[in-house]
Length: 477
Image 1 (cartoon, rainbow, N blue to C red):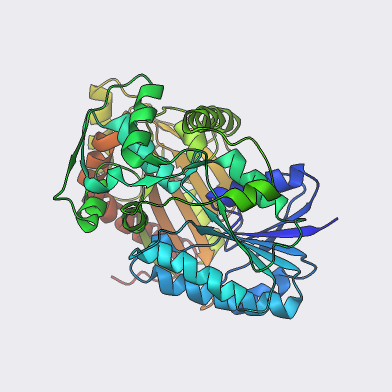
Image 2: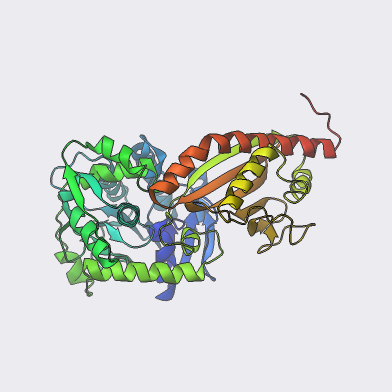
């Protein structure tokens, strides 16, 4: 049985590819920078392509690697991070004797000035020059829940009554269904004569982004006029998208740079090698929305984007985050002991008057925020209620996650994490994760952001001081 390492297993494609490979009979190893949700029977290995020391152990006994790592969310230097990661990983794979690397890239236009697409192309060239047998699979826009390009489209259609769009919406590209892409990826494990090849994986239709938006709107029974204007540059388009979609602005900026090109692609060699029935855009859309519902039902109540979206189809897949952090001289167990008093009579350790105002605002519109008290006053138990919050995640002594139940245009969770530092100090972090419901949800988040940053920073410092008092450490003002 071949052993397949999926690098980037926590990402969009990786989270679907891992169970697909397991289902067709391969031994699957998931590689990622941090533990992630995995099916039973899948081994996890910690691996960070920007930390070369983490790679040799991750590659032990690996026959085939799927390299799905990208850094679009890292900002302006993402292309440098991507290319250095490829160099690090290729060197480790060569030393480990990996049989084949399957690199997922992006289809390319004839002339390209997109940093995103150029980086994908160059990463493929680096792999092929590394001495490790590599096949590069270049994909079109992927139609599936969680795909960044698809989520931009989904947010625009669900959340805007009309769209004033840049001229790049008329650029044409051949989108591919997630299931079709998984078939191609899985088939390349055993395919012969593909090492060193570049293969295009695309769907059967060449559609403009405007046509895809219109088809999506028609599919959900919505009329959504689209008015393209020439004045929106790619830079302005990416800036505008941060107010219309939950997709992070650095990712949107990278995507927009590629969407301005017509990108036809010849997929004949791949179809001949791994034949299958390619889904039309409408069929792929039906499949995607059905998969979203299925996974959302399975993950309901869990800390996953689809599990949270199950509450409302307009909730964004990607989250916005605001946090505060503090270092404490107290040990982790003291911080956890203090945190155990959260809610109820103790309230929230800092600026309780602001918390009370927000609760009264919620109550005024029929929300549950004035429901106070805890199901279990002595310890945190997943599923219990803490005031108007629901406990959705507990890692005893280190992490607590609460689901936001007040009325608002979106869904959120509040996460507390306690981490020992190498210095001997303990770091406490409080982070709010917000999945907005359309433009109003984004506006709500932006309006609340200054208060969040102020409150969470003060909360972490108050918790740190109380924990120090518990263990007898003098408080320094």
